[in-house]
Image (cartoon, rainbow, N blue to C red):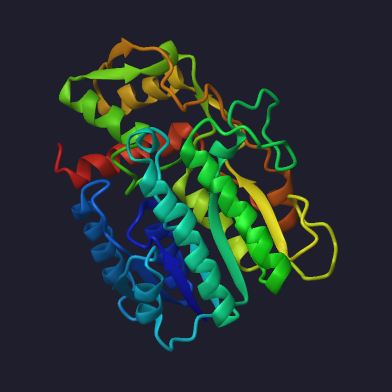
Length: 333
């Protein structure tokens, strides 16, 4: 089976591509290698991928926000399934550069939908986000909760992606699964995310910015658990049988939370990082940032029932694994 993975040089895309290639799929990865964060990290992920699966992974540098460029890159290749993970991430950056989110997450998602429709793919799995829940007071967050009040433009674009996908599932009977990711972390993670920022500052003896005075909880989900869930969903496209799917669609379109089902206090994570780094953190308590939310908590009953998803990595294991990778990547003893 040939599977197209967008954002293949990204954190989750790299890990999903590696897992698919290991199990024997042919993986075509695309990524524009933009400079949202240091492209050298993206190239290092690709280099690792090509070493792990030289015969089953191929890469094309391509900006999928350009429909013509995307069409030229794919050419006459046969693609059975798509895992669409490419996007402009980050809640806080959406306050600085909102147009980047419209280009990547709205125009780009439309281009992938059109590609999937034209290729008649068997299944399109795409990345949504827990950010769509905004300031939801009800916990844990469930897929049938109202998500009409996003706290950031990033969240709004991800909700828009879900709506566009529903339209294509209805009009063209295109089987799709949207996954609302909850705070993914682990080796090869992103420099703009908390684990990287905090680890770097602890090791350098610098002050850590702690927002909302530390009164934050996140449903941290280790990358290996996320990858397992993505592949379980990829292998189980929703049926076009008129039955109601998770998320409410009668078309072949399901939406699932994919998280750890256990919100962790920020102070606990800082303590784990301190122990793993062997240094005490210097904390600067700050107010809540615009666009952020105090708590995320995933109800994962639906994805567990549908495909058997069961995360297994506690933060006490996952965060030290990240610190170990971080030290190795930066040659820190």
